[in-house]
Amino acid sequence: MKTIIGLGQAGCDIAEKFKKYPQYKVYKIDVGLEEADSYAMKRQTSPELYESKCPSLKTFFKEVSNEVLFITSSGNISGALLRILEQLRGKADIDVLYIKPDSSLLSMAEKLQENVVFQVLQEYARSAAFEKIFLIDNAQLTEVVGDVPIKEHYNYLNEAIVSTIHMINVFDNSKSVLDNFSPPIETARIFTFGLINFEEEEEKMFFDLQMPREKKYYYAYPEEAIESDGTLMKKIKKHIKKNTEHDKMKISYGIYSTNYEQPYVYCLSNSTLIQGSEKILDK
Image 1: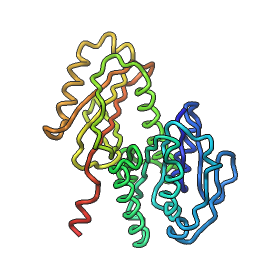
Image 2: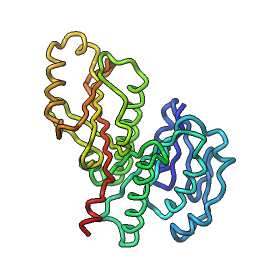
Image 3: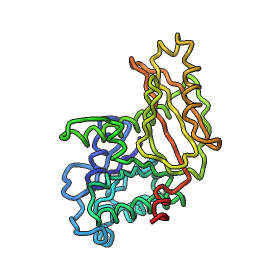
């Protein structure tokens, strides 16, 4: 069973959606929480105070083991995230899912805090302080999801995130019809996800990952198509060739049989490059 830990409102809202799947154990950390498997942090007025006053969570994490997906964004409570991650080290293999907020909605102070969290987490991932980091840009994900009612906006975004991660986890633990998967590039620890409209040949990534080193495709097809469509392999090869961005990019794929009526294609892409570093240099 994989452990999901959400920190802050964004992290907790996404973590909550994993509860509908039996494969996950969910923990939440935020101000004002009261339900089981949640830790109520004392409200502080700045990221610095959340860091300096971060409590011991050893008892809260006593049953955590194996694989952890730690979900967070850049609110004030993110000031405590490195201290919390330090308390998890040695207990489990840790992946971080970072939700990058729409910068147009942030104040100047919030933009500075977001930039610090965004850069520091990537540096920690690249130095192998944890296994990998998954980046999702809410502004870009909004374009992927399309027009939705404003009241349900974040609900739709969070549902897209959770369903994509869950399906990739399912495929990673299922036998494919055919695949050419190989171990990932060890130094490429910065990841994002994508959804592909195979019929329209449109690839929509959840983060604009610069200089991707690898793309891993999961083709999920109805069992009938797997058994009868003689053009399927040709279509897959055409799609892969079209979306290979440069000669050094490693491409792999797996084909899976499903009971769904429609085909689905998911993408997992990674990079060795600290994202956003070129903007800092420009400034």
